[in-house]
Image (cartoon, rainbow, N blue to C red; front, side, top):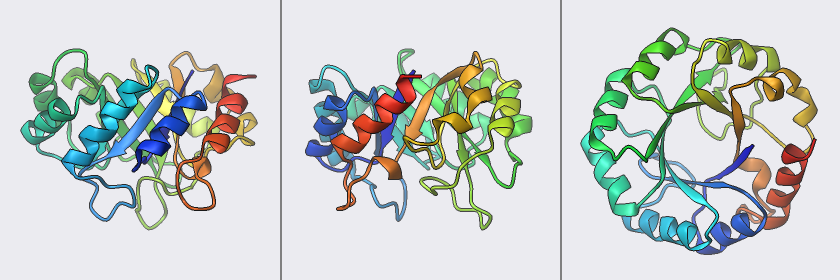
Length: 222
């Protein structure tokens, strides 16, 4: 199981997350108004910090929709994965796949709002376009996406996963104490791991090693 911690803005956070046992670090770029949005230079610096840990893979998390610009940014930063948040179309995935080296993984986020996923009918198209894996996340009733703290229903997740031929990560209000709410998800053959933001943060709002370690222990140890 992978544990991805999202939204680092400092080198100290990256190192703390690595020491706590996480596997992936999410770095935001092209997330207008996002609390952890990074300019390209800072993105590259933190991706280098992740490589230096010898453990973490870095994930470029973006709302961007310009394939050429995203490919240049990923290449310049040396990120391992690109996570497409928002409602980008399969055509963007196809264009991005053509621009990227094969080893860079493309993650497409699927958003679930009130038990329904507006991108569900596009899952097969995303796969044909070159999506390597999906991430299932909760949207709020008013349409906000990303780091909302809202939790998905286990049966909804499993039903969506049954429509995929790719593996998936789970996000949305995950904490060290609510693993047992996702029995069907945990047993699904496509389940790859979790993506957490808010629950990994300390009182100062920064990613915290102790809270990350709690998440790693809770989710990786049945």
